[in-house]
Structure formats: C-alpha cells, structure tokens
Length: 546
Image (cartoon, rainbow, N blue to C red):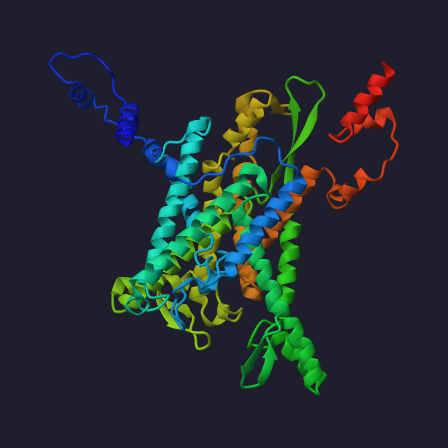
C-alpha cells in the first residue's frame, strides 16, 4: 500500500497540465486537448526503491587528513584482499576472458571476488551522466532531493548492471559448463559477484562522501596499475620457453641474464628487447610516459578573481589543460570494455552470424588460452601491438588513432556540460561566493571570458590525453597507455589533495612531532599563521593580556 501511494504521488506530481474545472471534459481530456501531455519524471520512480539501496551517511564533522589516509588504506586493504579471494564454485581449467586486455584498467582480477572490478559502477555513471546531459533525465543539481535521487538512481543502475554481468559471465561458460558446475554453484557464483559489486559501490561512496581521498574508483585503478608495473618489473616467477628459463620481472631478468650468459652485451640486449615478457625498454617507456604526463599537468591558465565585498582581495582561478582530468579515458575504457565483453560472448555462440563477425572476431592466444580480437569493430578499436604495426597494418592503426582522439575529445567536451564544470556553471559558482573575474563585473561578461578558455581546455585536453595514450601504447609501456595515464593523473590528484588539506607536505609527514616539540613564536606570527592547533594558545594569550 505504501509503495502504491508513493507511485501515485510521484505520478500525480509529475503530470504537468493546467488544472481547471471543465464541465464537458475530464481533466485528462482537457490536458490532451490543450496539447499538454503528462510527463513522468524518472527520478520520482526511484523513490520506492531508495530504502533498499545501500547508502553511506555523510560525516557529521570534517574528517582530518590523517583520518582520511587511514580510511583510504582500509578501503585499499579490503579491495586487495577481495582481489585475492577466489570465487567459490568455479570449474578448474575454465578458459576464456573477455576483459583480459583491459583488466588492469578496470581494477579487476579474473577468478576472484573482484572479477567485475569497477566496470558496473563506471558504466552506470557513464549512462546516467549522459542521459542527464542530453536532458532525457531531468535533474536539478541545486535541489538536495534531486541530487539524492540521482545518486540513488546511479547506484541502482550499477546494481542492475552488476547482476546482469554476473549472470552473463555464468551463462557464457566463463566459469565452466553450467551442467557440470550445477545450478547451486551457478547461483552461488552470481551471489558472490553481486556482493563484491555492492562492496565496490559502498567503498567508492565512502571515499566520495569525505571519509577518504578522491574516489574509490580512482584509488582502485591506480593501485591495480601500480601493482601490475611493480610485478612485471620484479616478479620472481620463472617462464619456460625455447631459449630456456627466464624470470618474469624485467629487472630480475636483467641480472639473471648477466649472471647466466657469458656474453654480457648479448645479455643486456636480450634484457632490453626480449619478446617473451616485459623488458627494460617497456619499463623505460613507462617512466618516460610518467614524466611526460607529470609535465603536462603543469599547463594551466590562471584568471585573477576578486571579491565583490572585500576590497583588495584577489585570488587565482586555475584552468588546467587536463580540465576534465582522466574522465575521458575512463569513459573510453568503459565503452571498450563493454564492447569486448558483449562481442566475445556472442561470438562464442554465433560465430557464423554476419553481424556478430562485424562486431568482432576472436582468436585464442597460444599461451594462457586468452582471446584477442583479430577482426571486426573490436579489432579496429584495439591498440596496435607494436610500433611496426603502423607500417604493416596502417588501416587498423589509423582507425585506432582517429577513434581514440575523437572519442576522448568528445567525452571531455561533453563531460564539462553534464558535470557542472561549464563556463555558465563556474560563473554561477563565483556569483554564489560573491566573486568575480577581475575587470569583468557583469555576469554575461564573466561567462564570455570563461568561454574563451574552458571549452578549448576541455576539448584540447581530451585530445592530448588520447594522444598520450596512443604514444604509450606504441612505445609498449607496461600496463598499457591508458593505464599509465590513469595512474599518473590519479596519483597527481591525490598528492594535490593531500597538500591542499594538510597545508604543508611536511606537516603530513612530520605533523605528529608538533605534539612533542614546542617552538616559541610571537603573537603576531601566531595570528598570521593561525591553525586549529594554535587557537587555544591565542585565546590564552588574549586572556592573559586582559
């Protein structure tokens, strides 16, 4: 009964028509006669299911930076533990992995509870933001209720995608033939994957609500990529092939080659260019990409903003080249991952279908039994394996370059409008804070001034992100170009957040010493550099003077 009443109220509240008393027509007939069709808001339909969607409450007080680091460490620990816990009920030797090539970026680990990684929540976010951006879903971000309902709707869609992907994984035979693993084990696998998906959603919300640093998605991606780079650099696992036994880690393989091989020059050359695993040239390319991305992070335009109320107050408003940060590459990764997932599943069952083959044809790798695209749309949207592919397969390389550059620039430009970062939104934020751009007092002129920089920074920044991704892929950077770019931008953002909230980087490292080391300061210095720790001292000084 309660649910029916909620639906009725939501429907009645969303019907927009002129309420007049007409003797010859009913209210509905009058609305249709006037051409005013009833309009049902999507967010109102979420109200009946809000109470079943898991939620994290906002903190009652501001969380200090040290506590945020602790919460972030706890979240990462939970994620890493779940990445190592195997899914119960999986048939041993089950092959096939639709997301093998992009698992590092999706923060997922095959066969573990983190099988799905962040794919459901990123896909749900992309869908909801795009629907809101094109006004299919009406959301007023100024209303607290709309923000709450939109967040709940996004989590609800994420849950539906998690359930859908879990069911699809089981039905596709990724964990073995259903008849062999049994119906009970199939249900248990789905339950485990759904539970892990809910856990990822809650950990991400925990970070975004202010308990941690950044978002859970970003932390999981950066952790997974850094773990992959360290493992491929220092892995002690041995690999057997025709040339003998080698270590998987590039650096360990170098020292092993120098010890085993009598010709040291050949040993060094082999360590740099060996084809059987990650080599030193891949590691050097990774470091180069890291440095290039960090260098580009410093590109920005700073606008002088002043206060309308406080005369003489002036501040810098930076507009970075990477205005939308790593969002374009995350959305592009989500798009590719879903295409790979759907393409490989339908290809297994309908190999002879023309439309399925146009979507993508797949072939199993000789080592490991993994599949990679060899034709169709999935192949042309995959990065070239080597830099020589630019010559041997120019159509594939050209299509991939154009696709990545276009989609990153378009996603970046679109995200500005749907995420509240457009020139109009920034001008409104400045107005709400009684701030204005120097020498631009009228609101229309502020928007015009911001429009000179923000759209260009968004589009060109997305283009640069796509170009860096392509360069990293061609150089053979460990973890793929997309992964390296995501890791660098996430780590850079975390460092900026820590420095901003701690006030001083040294305070974060050595802040605990101030409880034990007392340094005398003058009253003027105390007022000029007052912090929450100095407040009691100032009050005592003022009391002593009185």
